[in-house]
Image (cartoon, rainbow, N blue to C red):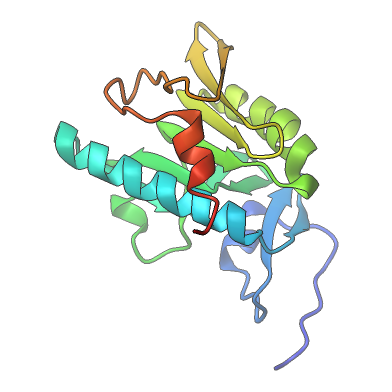
Length: 191
């Protein structure tokens, strides 16, 4: 494999066109590449469960929405974040089918699964970037704290609700979802 050297700062266009030549994942933060550690297996299992759950609910609702794992969101002039799961309107990706999977407009929903190394990024940085974009719902699934935070965009700010244990998730986008925090956390276990 050829070694890749990265320059100090990238425009958004350069980031999208970057041929990574490695299995590493990067986010663009103020023009700089930030390498993401590979997720844990628990993280992957929870994200997969959420993706499947949301896809089934989208089908049941008959919405023309798409659910993606690890797609990107452009969050600024020189910023792009990778979500664990996101839901977008189909028309948001029509013109970008053959380009890197980075939404140019805010998704309906962004979901992040917290890992030890992503606590600040998920609770602080992504929250403020998603709020500035006007992402309608932002879920923070935190297996470390055993809770799910649902942030709903209303009048320029996020309203926060936290759920634990056997509490059912309340989502304005998915009002009949019928899943508890315990269900979500159990999806990250084997056996």
